[in-house]
Amino acid sequence: MEKEVLIVGAGPTGLALALGLEKQGVPFRIIDQNAGPGTTSRAMVVHARTLEFYRQHDMAHALTEAGIVEDAIHLYKNRTEVAQVPLGGMGKGQSPYPFVLSLAQDIHESILIEWLKAKHVLVEWNTELVAFRQQADHVEALISKDGSQTHSRFAYICGCDGAHSTVRKQLGIGFPGGTYSQMFFVADVVNEKPFRGFSAGFRGSEFKLALNIRTTGNVRLIGIIPDALLGNGPPEAFAPLIPHVEKVLPVKVGTVNWYSSYRVHHRVAENFRQGRAFILGDAGHIHSPAGGQGMNTGIGDAFNLAWKLAMVLNDRMDDSVLDTYETERIGFARKLVATTDRAFQLVVRSKTIRNVVIPHIIPKVLKSSKLRTEVFKMLSQTKLSYHDSLLSSGRIGAIIAGDRLPWVQTHDGDNYEPLKSADWQMHVYGTPNKQMKKVSDQYGIPLHYAYWTREMKRKGINRNSAFLVRPDGYIGVATTTRYSDAIRAYIEAFDMRMK
Image 1 (cartoon, rainbow, N blue to C red):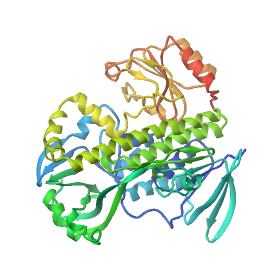
Image 2: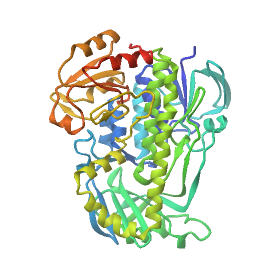
Image 3: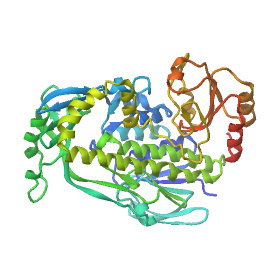
Image 4: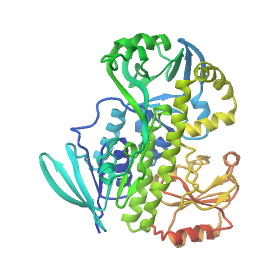
């Protein structure tokens, strides 16, 4: 049986998949038709859940050191600040990373590429997937590199090749959705005026977003191009847009380093898997930039699929586990696209939302600690769950199988440190238990104890809760220390084998 995986596309999604497979010891090739990594900032926002995944690979610190922590959103009306949304306060205690990280995509990618290089993994640039054909037990791919074409065999092929995905198109998978009528702009500029950080500004029908990029003297600007400037098409340069930006936000635009105009699509592929082929990231879902969710969702796809491919290729689980990639990720993608679409339409079409609700009502509502927590969970993707997955079984207290393991601090650190193994493990929050120890010994699954605390109660973890935790940090089984058979039955049902 072939063991190697072909990753098509070396953007953040493909690179994250490469990280996950390397961690699990799975051989792969990662190819990209471009001559090298991207050189523009593109996607900027890195959310807490993504940083938690990177922590499992001892990489989160590299990203946070390279980026700029944005722990508040400043809301402006006609250049005057009217409110703040405290991101840091909203996420406090919910994640090791209670903030939004501003990090240019080219820098983000370079960190991942260098990490892979240190593991002796190189991206094959100027290398293009021409075609592929699936067989019963492998994939045959025709690959073009340096002017010559070769046939290679792989166990699976993963399309991380963007909205115009070759993999998706060759599979004949539909990509239904639509395109917003508005024309967007994005620009990276030197700001000649002190800037407080992540900002949203409103003036009449216009709204603009801004956040720090690379250094605090450089700013990313995003917004909708006013109809009056469109004429026969969007402006070729950023200059005509500068007065509109400076009327909305307290910035002074200096040198323009990069500017582009674009239309936003909202689409979800009809399937994320077909046989031995998978699609991830923008190849499977694209949507409005509301909330900075796109890149983070693609990275989530990658870490979800990586461990499942590894379990099958390392003969540790039946290949039926691969079915759960589509069911888990396509449901989230559809919900995300619908949510961001509604949010975008409300902001664009409703003067009340722009002029009253966002700058005045939302900051008052967010004075509620419970609401702040819920908003952070949604934005950071820490609320994402797989309750309906075949891999989710049981409930104890407020914790339902399929939830992300709640982050809690313990007497010697936190409960996320063991997740660095990126492997199955058992967690008990309470008193050590002989039954759980027997299950651990019988199946070779590491067992981690943490003394139960009031913080755990606040997170919904009952005393003597027991969890079987998946390699990606989600809960497979939620039970109690008294009912260890629930974990035993799960292990047998999925024919799980430890290393």
